[in-house]
Amino acid sequence: MTEPPLALSVDVEDYYQVQAFARFVPRDTWPTYPPRVSENTRRLLDLFDATGATATFFVLGWVAKNDPDLVREIAARGHEVASHGMDHRLLTELTPAEFLDQARDSRAILEDLAQAPVLGFRAPSYSVGKGTLWAIDVLARAGYAYDSSVFPIRGRRYGYPGGPTRPGRLAVNGSAGIAEFPLSTVRLGPVRLPVLAGAYLRLLPRWVSARALDYHRERRIPVIVNVHPWEIDPGQPTVGPSRGPWTHYARLSKMEGVLRSLLLRGSFRGAAARLRELGLIGNPGPSPA
View 1 (cartoon, helix red, strand yellow):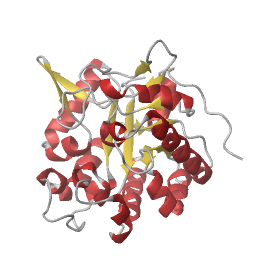
View 2: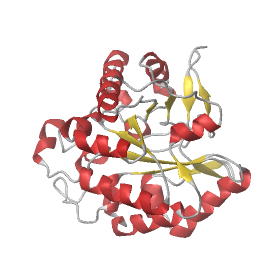
View 3: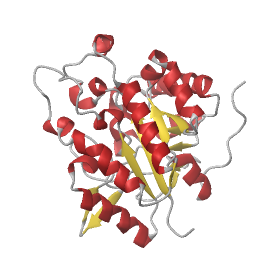
View 4: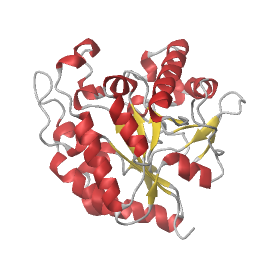
């Protein structure tokens, strides 16, 4: 290959389901909010068509149950469907048994809709860390081939500073484990800076993201770009008693242009396709009957 594997992913959740709003948006009130995830996801699908990119869509089980046609369309348009759990609860809020149920249930729902094997998982808010590595063994038991939840940074709400910075096998307690495609970082002295994902992609100047992509190319480090559908939606309603954290609403009108400029700089494919090229997962089995 003339460039390292460039991967693209989307965490399919709606604007009111993000962790930043969890304290004042109970899950039982989700049906009362006007949905926007389907329209915004289709805008991303159109953008990917226009730029020749394919992606992995990590779909929340709740979204899949409420709009099954969206999942069918993602698959029909040539993209990988993967799991984002059922209801956006962090791994720290779940027991291993509860997480196993969610991992299995979401996978079954998505495979039925996509009519294709669901190989990948991304934990809400990248919540696989030092204290939740047990989730990797659970994912293996649930039939997943890879995870993409590790953000090897020291963050306020998430992060695994000792985690892998490149795709590889992630195993716990001597188990075989599964493949891991960690989120992307750039080293600056002793610090790893998060780049090319969510708020970091949206809030940093466009040239910083372009340089971060070049950083990975120059060192031949695989990279994964990640976005949420609500991040290209400046017209989304205000949530909660105030406008919430400024990071949620800042530069929403800029995100689509930033993403387009990055996608035009290389050939982007889904996470499973890139992990297969790296020899970290095998070819998928037959689609569900």
